[in-house]
Amino acid sequence: MNQTVPPGWYPDVDDPTSERWWAGESWSDARRPRGAAVTTTPEGQRGAELAIKLSQTGLWFCIAGTVFSIVGAGFTALFGMLLVGLLLFAPIATVFGIITIVVAARALGGTSGDVRRLAKTALVLGIVCTCTVAIAIILCVPLGILFHVLGAIKHPPF
Image 1 (cartoon, rainbow, N blue to C red):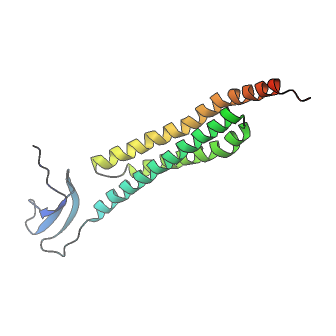
Image 2: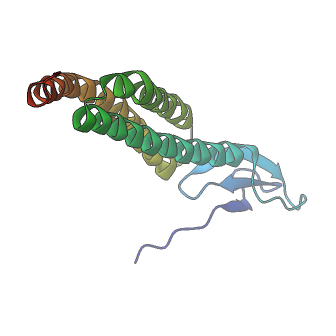
Image 3: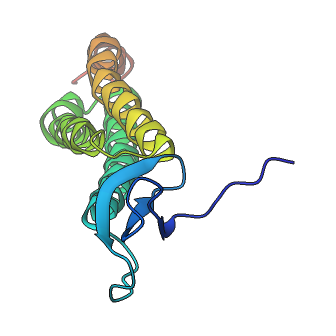
């Protein structure tokens, strides 16, 4: 069984008068005098917490963007509403995908391996979401036109 030491302040082996922050995987550069007031996180840890929040936010934007791209593709393919899919849902999905990419890229500054994995996941999913919009447009434009033509053939104007 692999036991890990929890993050926290521990005596610095290089300087017996100070303590150093153990981040859970490695030592950070944060130091304080031994016996200083107890704090829960050093400055570096706040950056990692921000990176986690950014990654989670990026994942939510990715989910929203994917939903918008699917709804837009559905409107285009099922109802022949090409303009609704292209002009309403595709731009919203693209914006959400781009926000995901930007937020996840900022989160990659986190020091923890878990934070970096979460940020990379959000980054990849943001790229997939943005590409999904392009693929939906490429596939649904011909389908929307085809359904429109077939609908006109089945229902003559007279």
